[in-house]
Image (tube, rainbow, N blue to C red):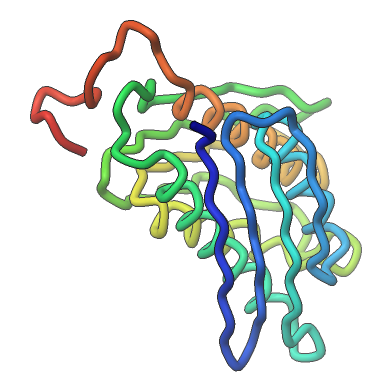
Length: 195
């Protein structure tokens, strides 16, 4: 049975249709109206080996905040829905990933409890037209709505594009590891018997 989820979220600020397949091949169709964000979501799908479609229309005439945050909300909800009762998943995932001069560690736990810790800063306020503060906004929304722990640590890096890209790639790889089914795990990966 495919582990997939589709969401349609409409507010006064954004209209988003998102479909996520966990056991995919990294294919994506991304249209958010925010060019750099489209690039990051494409990387997320490719390195997570998720099939991801996102069609988002937002009030980008105001700024990109609502679009980026609301896509994060939808992606988090889709992750939670697609993993279902969590039977057989690895639960934890982590990746330390280099990108040129940049090194980022991302660690994930699908614990059923939302927590987000970020230890990264960008040397510039923008990459092109994209406000780099929205990287934190996006991952906070994902973690809160997927009910997962997410820790992202920048060890070093001086190029804002590289830092953002390493964050998305490392987190994609950590998510891929965490949602992978382990044939030896016959139940829920918790001594409590529930997550």
